Image 1 (cartoon, rainbow, N blue to C red):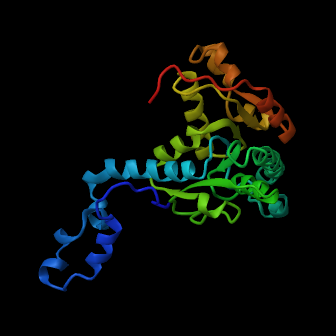
Image 2 (tube, rainbow, N blue to C red):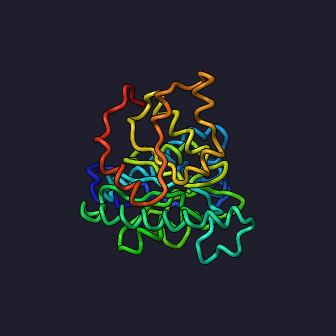
Image 3 (cartoon, helix red, strand yellow):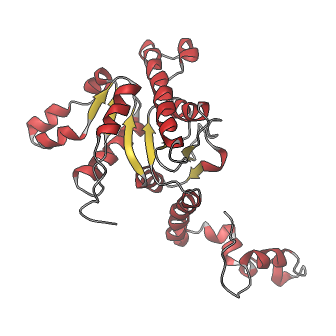
Length: 279
């Protein structure tokens, strides 16, 4: 980020960081208490500073995306283990290998939405994924193939550390807090697409549905790729029969099988209305 619009007469904090590096070497300047608070990692990582870290993790992607002029996104949730057709034979189970068709549909969908995005100067309908392998890689790859940009919202995990190489480099983010990451997925979303996946994908899906159901966010298309997969995983109608959700809640999701179906639904969906309440 560039700070070219400063209108204050005060000295820039970066200048003091540089000056502090050249302080005389004394017991006082070596003491942790002498470090500038905003340049002291040990201090920033203290338990009491969690609220500050949460705010920083919210602000950094927000400011960068604002500076890039990105107004809306199309979010792609899906499994990191879903193989590409080229890696289908390496899948650990036949069922997982069969899901490779959704890698291809994710790639095609991202291509088509990115072509739409390019007509807006890359400001609207920007593909946004979790930045990892599998379905996420397919989404970023599709955007790259047609010359568009795409966002990757990664998170520090014991595995899948590096973002896939198709994420636009300066739109590749890394998170510590799952909650802030999920907030960024939804803050600019014009549509949510959900491909077969595991716990993480289910978590993201239910977070989205809860926010829409409770009118904490505007209603947008929530499109589930692969009806047979999702009908086996989640018995939505059993929830409605039990009365734990209403019949109208079943209308919050739509099944699709192909990229073309998904694009048609997004095209036909009315512009989002503001939510009943705001954060």
